Amino acid sequence: SKEIQPWDAMQSWMSEEQFEGYIRGNAIKYLARYPEKGGRYDIEKSQHYLDKLLQIVYNGRFRLRMEIRLNDTISRDND
Image (cartoon, rainbow, N blue to C red; front, side, top):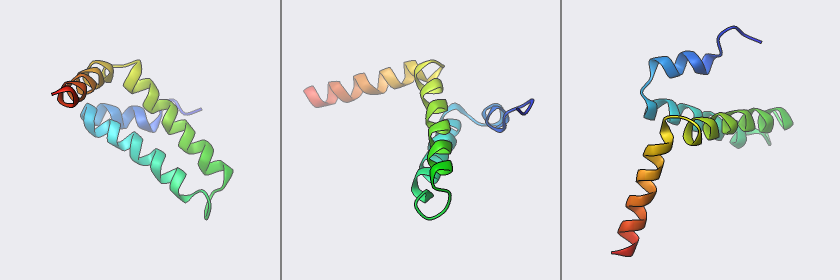
């Protein structure tokens, strides 16, 4: 295991929104390419990024922002 995970470095250099996009983009990349390139490895790698996305969105500082977005969406839908 690496002393510093690459995504920890990325997180320290990026805004919250940029980092979330980086994680989402990598999950999509690995999932999209699995049939032609990495097969099972790419699906597992995508899951690795999805697990991190769940962690940062629901266990970290993104949670409040996501709840606000959801409330705004619900409010607009009810208007």
